[in-house]
Amino acid sequence: MRVAYFIRNIGVSGGVKVVLQHVQMLKEDGYDVTLFTNRVKDSWDLKVKPVVFDPESFRYLSDFDIIVASIYHDVKMLFSKGIRKLVHLCQGYEPIDYLSRISGESVTERYQRKGFLSLLESRLDILKFRKRIRQIEAVYALPTFKAAVSKHLVELLESKYHQKCALIQNGIDLNIFHPYPEKVWGANRKIRILSVGSADVGFKGIVDTLDAVEFLKQKGIEVELIRVSPGIPSRREKEGDLVHQFLTGVKEKEMAELYRDADIFISSSLEGEGFGLPAIEALASGVPSILTDISTYRNFNENKDFAYFVPTHSPEKIAEGIESFIRNVEFRNKCIENGLRVAHAFSLERTKNDLIKFMRDLHSEN
Image 1 (cartoon, rainbow, N blue to C red):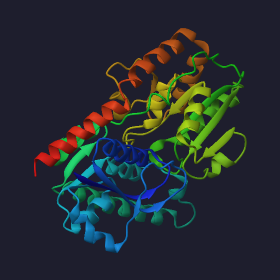
Image 2 (image 1 turned 180 degrees about the vertical axis):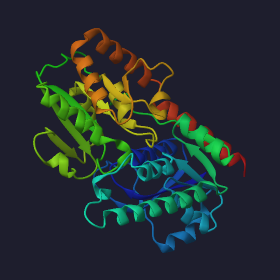
Image 3 (image 1 turned 135 degrees about the vertical axis):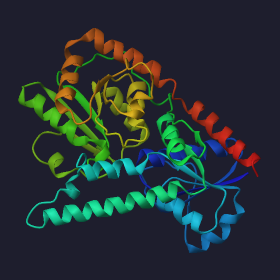
């Protein structure tokens, strides 16, 4: 079977990582897989050589049995070219993020309007976001084959669009993401806190983590914040001593070391988070974690005993969680133990089984 994956840019992100995993798994299972892209960055150790997509490439798309795209405008573009065996792989439901921008729940530095024209600019932003939501919903309504990386996304799409959606659960390499055999927690005296994601992506909620760390520093609690991002630091991250270390372009094995060296992992994501790979990677690495009480993290396991859960937009609760991990050794160790158990349900083997079954079922419908 010939399968093509289409991804606009191969940069460092969880979504790109998932696509690369899919391509590699299918090749290992004997599929003839082509990875199309417009642009490649050198931060990934690519095992599959991508093909640069250009206008001439459309002539060859009909040669493939199945074509997979994840970004909604790529799905729209491919569908408009008459591609009918087209899979829309949902890694996050984009309208949720735009709705949070409209409500003012998530406003990044880019959209923080100041000055005389700020009100007009904000209203124009809202109109633009509402239009974008309508465009995205129209793409999801197309008669494409649907798959999603998390149970809550499957349920959302099936409920809203009344189309069948398969689960291809995200997974991680447990041979890479694992704890140190022996680790002395807090050995560096200052508690090392790890946060992953771009502050320019509103649903990552990075500002809440920054606020929590600032609050603790003001109380005199010695913590070091390590930030890992696919992009440049925000203005606030560059100023002062709030961020101890800012890293970008980190490779997978280097990332695993960062998790193992961390004392606490924080993800303060909002409901727009599609899966949250860093959270599972942190749990698998034996890092006590503070997670927001959102759909994707609740779906990791029905028992919320594997992390310290906080409401969204609650930096004071995040700070309380950090202090709980510092002071309560029994609670901390229980979260580590339960986190390891939960993470082991998200293996790459499970992902591969879901993926191969989906492809076989799809091919049998021909």
